[in-house]
Image (cartoon, rainbow, N blue to C red; front, side, top):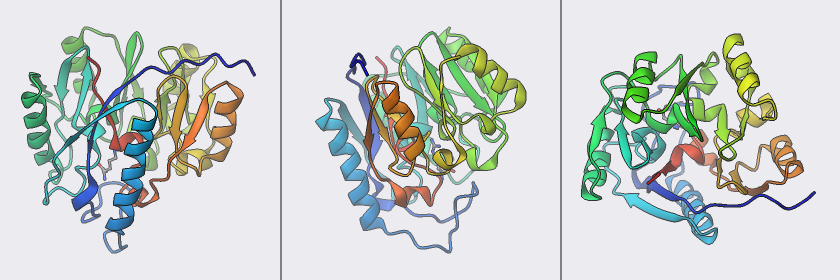
Length: 270
Ligand code: ARG
């Protein structure tokens, strides 16, 4: 296998899981009666941050709020493309207040925040993919927010319909490998959206249901290294076949809230 994949340095925004918990259920993974080991979650999260830094990426943090147990899922708070910040309007009332500390972080960094008028969950559903933005709908982010994002960024937004409640955010069913290609789990999408993906990405890396249930599609790629759940074994093998370098990072404690690597990572694109 020729070694031709090139990594690019990224800037990530994350939030320490000091107050991480499952106190309500807004997706099928969440069971408030099942205990969460916060100390383990903190160790797993720390390992993710160390791994990003070891690979040359910049990691910035927003201060966690005690009343917001899902705040660790930084990807959901906004989408940033070319320095423009499209701030979220969370669907669940429990998560709506998360917008406040994230907005404060962006403002302190000198960014202006545009607020979505319709339900929009940031990079959970809006996935910048080179020349366009892929956008999920069906469970959280609305088609109205897709249109608003297109108008705001001036970038084509391609709507995709999610149909399986286990994969309620686009970033649980698809991730970008680089500017040109993606990996995804086809059955998470409506038949029409599957066709759209097949047209746009004839060479996509396809994942199995086992990969998807192991949060293998909730990965972060820098163009060469793919930070991926260790449970997604078939996917990791396919990625390696294509010249990517899988870097396993276990965030199993966060799966209890319906999130993993990508959910914990927001990319700041300047
Ligand atoms: N408990 C959170 C929710 O249901 C998990 C969010 C996961 N984030 C993601 N980008 N998929 O909203």
